Length: 588
Image 1 (cartoon, rainbow, N blue to C red):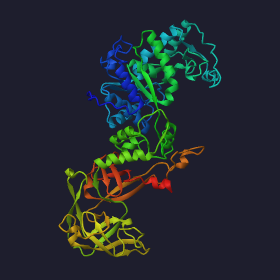
Image 2 (cartoon, rainbow, N blue to C red):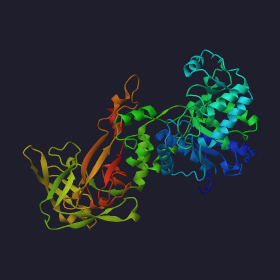
Image 3 (cartoon, helix red, strand yellow):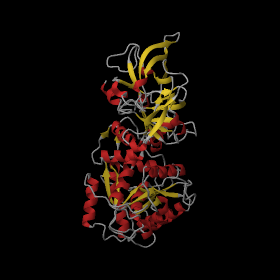
């Protein structure tokens, strides 16, 4: 990643204030950026410049990233860019039974898509397995860790509660030599899963349960997606996470509030290793912020898995899913997510963000970038009786009304057109300014027409609307605007329009808090969250490429599906409507 130009810092949130204070005080200026192999080597930090901050985004590769991760990605990479620092991407891959290369690849792709680049700073906790094992032996040698042979159930029973202290394991005072021997044999694969664990020796009476002799290594005969079968023991997340931060010379370890109670444990590990000369100082500073709580979605990994496995959605990249791969397929933009992250900010107070805030950010971004096109989603024929049947003319429509530099495109106009069915009403309600018996409207970019009648089928359904046009009212010609009408509708030539599949996506859940109380969250699924129509679109859309974005006039913002779009046969997904329709629903 090329070195970004430092931006003028803004103390708009408490994390920025901490970073600015640290930089001003030179808290990391004295850091030893070098070190012997096995500690925080210079090549890990990639720099000997002590003025830089160093952050990281550390996902576990056991699933797809979701919208909540987007906030963390923007925060960590954004802070590094803002203060001329470096952000690492590190996979905390300590559980081989749940991690897959598929998830690694999807996370790499998601971070790139959001607009961030880790450069050469891509790391894995599995890079440090040798270091972690050596560090663990060091703690055993100092009497700060021991091999425990209790079962998982026995350890759980002796751990205590929030109000009662735990009990020491009968193996807590096992001789150092015996623990070292057992640890080596665990590593060599001599024992079945669950036979022994390595535990830190801290305090079984600690008020913070995380400090009650936590597990550091467990036996797991499983193949790792990077190290294969080289290991029979794997570090726990709590053992590997904080130490990995220190090995990478991270200055500010930014995480969500659920890790606040784990901070004392991370500090205990790192401080003991630094005392033994195994880690550089100063050590990473952990800072917690409130995670993203968003209405109308579920971000629980368990619930997301259930949605996919029970086929309530069409996979992890279903455009209704809150995964980043789903959001991308829906047509949400990286710029919209970065705007959203900046707009909601960070704080230590838990709060709920209404989904409409995210939608508004997407509208704001898409409005600026999406070219305009015409699509008729529910068509009915419009016949202009006094227009020559063999005539065809081209009307000019702007590609973007606020960006004249994008030019115009021709839209064919013929005697028979398609219009939206809702643009005709036999008995118009009050305030209705579209087509009705005797009413006049302007066909956008074309002429003023007057409704003269309709054709109906045997069931009384309107199958064609008849009009007459005023040839002196063509848009863009002198005097065309003298004739004033209140209605303005869009249309497509029946002869030239193309058919296309359009998927109308809406929120996946009807409730702002799915599954609140004792209710099954699946009971809140929105049965209208996906509707597929065969629409008519203007010829210019026939050549749309995957992920091309457009505003369909009056209908919202759409994207050519990145999976199903083929040359000459685009499939369009609705990203977001032109305005918040849920505000009205919520008020009723």
